[in-house]
Amino acid sequence: MVIKPKVKGFICVNAHPAGCHEYVDQQVSYASECSLNGPKRALIIGSSSGYGLASRIALAMSGGADTIGVHFDRAPSERKTAGAGWYNNQRFERLAKARGLMAESLNVDAFQDDAKAAVIEKIKQTVKAVDLIVYSVAAPRRYVASEDKWYSSVLKPIGRGFKGKTIDTDKGEIKTVELKEADQEEIDATVKVMGGEDWLQWIEALNDADVLADGCKTIAYTYIGDEITWPIYGDATIGQAKKDLDKTVTRINTLLHSNRGRLQTGRSEERSAYIGVLKALVTQSSAAIPVMPLYISLLYKVMKEQGSHEGCIEQILRILTTGLYGDNCQKDSAGRLRVDEHELTEEVQSEVKRRWERISNENLRQLSDFEGYRHDFLKLFGFGFQGIDYEADVEAVPSE
Image (cartoon, rainbow, N blue to C red):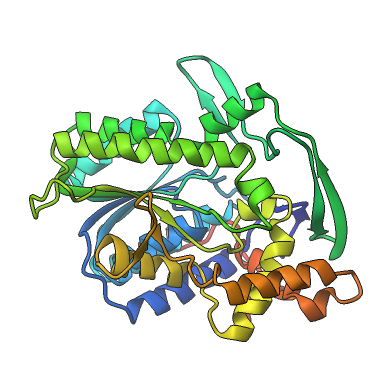
């Protein structure tokens, strides 16, 4: 079949196999030139794309780690392509195994108990125990089997409604978005989906199964942002989920230190669980959040002009080498590892705010990097790469 992007709002419902392979290959090429003195057995929960996939690539290709990846993507059929994450992880496995590394992927719903059981069994069959767990799950809803109930997250402000600018990414036009304030049920549901409960449940399950190595660490990723994004990220339902994540990291640290997670230095003040704060980038989750596509388009333009822009693989390698497995990373008062400092400089934020006030349909492409945003969005699904013939007939189920 000839595969062209089918974009519906903030999601692309298909993916191009060759393009997804190129998406992985480019990150592998970058990571292969870097060195990471890190873990040798890593579990990545949420390895479809974005920061989770970049973590898997960095750990393996820069640090020589054996990896198990957990993702939840549609498998291919003769008539439909797979989800991008299916192609990404298949490609990664092939490249990692070619280097003599163990690489296994499980296509399962990370929220479910049977997924946790399957991963634990895979660990026991392969690496026996893990030195690092990366938690990078971003999902719009979650099924809790013990309650036989679905929870859906919402992107709403708390306490009052919100009205602001955003961009229609299909039409490339500035428009106004209005969001009603969330009620308590919506807040609670968002915390249930996007908070730290499932991360904690993973660590508890792994600990109970005795598959956490001595000195094991874990990290979950988050985004904080600044003034423009605070109505959506701070004073909002997502903000409540992030507060829950902060509480969870304390509980995980207590669990790991009371059991087998104390660092090999033996210093009890050392932490084993971390939250990593990353910069705003185009990911499948950020594309769904009002305000963010326009903010990211402006941010890309400013940071590229100032020479401080980084992509997923650069951000992840920096947080791993300088923070989680180094001592040269900025930490905030809550102990979070921060590699979003270039985004939050006064020089960058003041310029983004200045352009935010001036942006219009007439000057969108002059003041922002909307084309760069859209290009990065399509790359998440394997489209827009040079050197790939998108008119060629390809198999949705690749032979490799």
